Length: 286
Image (cartoon, one colour):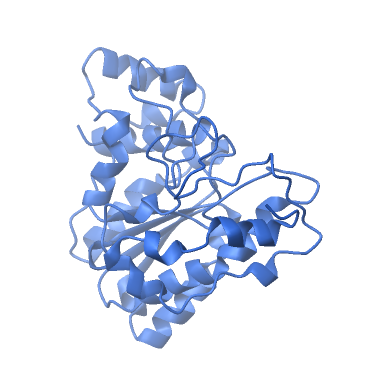
């Protein structure tokens, strides 16, 4: 494999359109991933994995169901009601699945309580607070233990973690990252920004298509990379004449404690959906 990140990405993603679920393939038929936008100074060593990928060889320790386009497998374009936009995949091969914030090395929330990432933990705290109207779950210090305690006492109920994001997809939630792959994390070459440039045309094409469908749509933009797409979303929706059907629920990235402070962003998503006459999302499905 080449010693340039741009070439390594091109080699890894060769034939990528055919790996998308069929309903999504027309959306990206004219898209060219931006290899030229990855600085030539960014090197790639053969021993550094790019993940998640859609064909062998998968990175050692990757979840068996990890896939670059996993976020698109359980929801069709016409069914999307909420687009949750994060930053990049988990920088841990065992966690990254291809959906933003889904964690691939978990099965049971109680048995795996100490392995739940801080991001997913904060999302679940907000989710439970939204469903049960218990703001005590949102306490940054004690909320997680309170939630686990109620789950253990069966005062709350959550679907097994391995099925959780499937439940979200069936409700029309697309869990997207601004970059669909990752390699070196926080390296001196800043590989993250190289991946960000590479996937920019893909994310832009997605935005253009979903806002053109002229149906209620909420963009949950979490973190600075996600919020940077707001002007483009507004511009594309204005051009399509659908701006009145678009809403935003913006927040800091779930990894920071401010995600659990102020208004509950998941409740904001549901209020926006209800304002459009849409059914709310069950963020904490049993």
